[in-house]
Image (cartoon, rainbow, N blue to C red; front, side):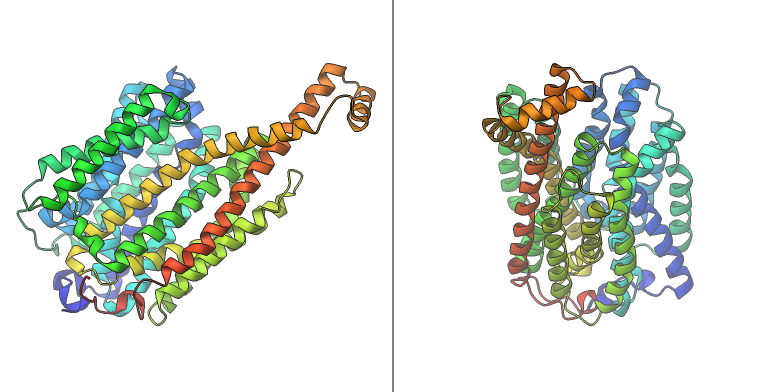
Length: 519
């Protein structure tokens, strides 16, 4: 059966006008949910101060959303089989909008955390649901462009999120980072429901796998909290982190056994029998983890060591978003004729080049120097998401696309969370290593050091102040060396992933090709 035959005719026969309007509404929802996963990150100190809690307590605003989102994403397939694609998506958008409003009027940290949990639960089905809805309303020959629309909104949001969050909290007040979602969510839900609300997919009375759901909540929750709190608790030196790791590992194994043997699993793990889904998901997770880790490390390096403000650090990253916006529509047009593996290869080459370019930066590099690698990264961002979505979904029957999208997104999100947690630990420990090595070759009795202290004294600094400034300079250099180490490692891993890409099956025109049998 071809993709066109498998798509419900009620969704696949929209006229161009309503189809474009629906795509716009879906893009708004995608942008909103991806944006909210990053927009709160830079406002934690402001939120914590306003609510009268410590910054450590305030980080639960991020953690609660991440945990709830990670748990609900894999449920997308079951929800849309049980209640229908359109109904599930619109309901998720409405709940997300309501939760955003409640977050904006939260009166205490516990209330804000509770509403962020609701927001995270609602956001889980939105990204894979939007992807499945776009693929359903576009004809086969235009599905590459549908993926381009989805990718465009999904990749721009993480770049503008921190900048927008910082600007809103500085110029207005933090509740507005949530309240701005309200009109956007209302418009998206109304448009989708009005145009395709009466054209929903068929539903099935699929039993609820309560045991599988419970196990999923346990091991994903434990893993996400472990990743978010690991660095603060000094990782496995903390009994809490050890306990969470054991719970996550045991829970995952039991969950795996149960899902593979249950007649109606909550998560369809048989999707990994497809070579493209299996290898594509692995390569996508590693590539996305590298992207998130490098984005975070560059931002931290600029702000904590080089004196950049949050706004300027965001502006440094803006060229990648601009280039991605220009590249993505072109890729969407070409994907209908060219094997998606070529675009995935371009993405990993461009990522590798951007990381390698960063590895040559120094602490006194100019803003322009920091922006140049972003151009290569923008090319990578404009091809990465759309290419890997096409690769992973190639061969998946259309009725299983929501489940496949949800599972793939869950794996990618988990990889990003792991990268976020580990890159800061890598940076701290390697910076300490380099600082120790630099200190071994530095002495206040050396002639250069004596001359430096004398010069600083001539500028009005005391001896202790001069030594403190030199120690600070030593720390900046050590942090720079640690960052460059990570950039080099990332570049080589990105280049190595190209080999894995070419072990997948050819898409021969991306999503326009009828799906083949799952291996």
